[in-house]
Amino acid sequence: MTDYSKLDAWIDAHFDEEVQFLQQLVRVPTDTPPGNNAPHAERTAELLKDFGLDAEKHAVPAQDVKEYGLESITNLIVRRKYGNEGRTVALNAHGDVVPPGEGWTHDPYGGEIADGSLYGRAAAVSKSDFASFTFALRALEAVAKPAKGSVELHFTYDEEFGGILGPGWLLKNGLTKPDLMIAAGFSYEVVTAHNGCLQMEVTVHGKMAHAAIPTTGVDALQGAAKILNALYAQNTLYQQVTSKVEGITHPYLNVGRIEGGTNTNVVPGKVVFKLDRRMIPEENPVEVEATIRKVIADAAAESAGITVDIKRLLLANSMRPLAGNKPLVDAIQKHGGELFGEPIKAMGTPLYTDVRLYVEAGIPGVIYGAGPRTVLESHAKRSDERVVLEDLRRATKVIARTLSDLLA
Image 1 (cartoon, rainbow, N blue to C red):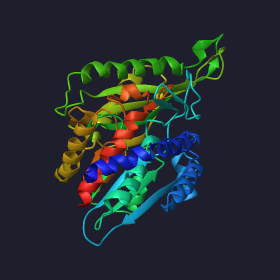
Image 2: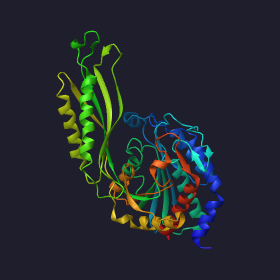
Image 3: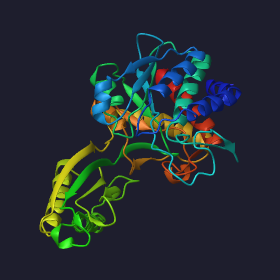
Image 4: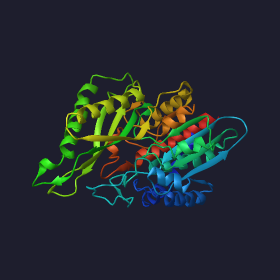
């Protein structure tokens, strides 16, 4: 047997244990918002301890978390050093997730198994890679027994809000500086680039009035409607702006939340909506934000008495590949191709992730982990999110083999 086959055999022998580990992670909710995620970190650390893996607990100061709009964040680092020479490879997955929403046919916190898949919020993105990364590390130590380099597990809890208090906080405070990193994946491909994201909150002010005498007020909803129409019209223009990165098409804009008014018999005096603008790697974020602000201001000016306040909620830069990521790409493509029986592409994704924070710190990184052929198949951020167990098994083997190569 080759070392690779021994790694594969160890993972097969312990796969039921890996599935049970993932089930226990799914059963601890990490809905963000509200973002009370420290309990999940505590539970994860307990489970890792059972495997002989000590997790450092790095609690973000409560005031910082509160000002950020969340309740609690404790990030975890597991450090395994095998020798003074060689690379340090970090594996990062995030535990925070969007709330489950409606339409589930399985308990979103049940970790139920049906038809070869494990169901639950974050089963695919990205608690599955808490499991794949942990068991790849265990297989590496049990079989390959590396004599140099080191591996770090970074389990963080701020991807949904941009990563600033997750990987960004660990990097800013000098708690880690790996040579290479792999972040949780969501498709068969190895992802080397991704979109950026600008999120903004727009408050449209009018003047409340009784619905029986509407002319004494200024309807904020009508003003908001003009602004929304102007913003949505931008999507037609964005289709003419195309990316050269395979897997990424063009920019687009979405308004994901809107609220306002006080009652049905009152002219609404205030409407608040939140928008999400995805940016392709070729775009300049400063110019994108300036354009959005102008579109909003121009549309608001069409309605007498309407004023607007615009607040930036998030600016996540695009991820652009660093030249040093070649060893990661080569290893994952080699082993992924062998284990999945099909070519593994290196490409971009229209999503945004906190991997960009590692890359911005000069750390070459890629995105790869347990996922279906496409993000859509995983039902990520939708009802009945799931991970195919055979995909989880094979991805764990790919990561274990890749670590063995990188530390050889």
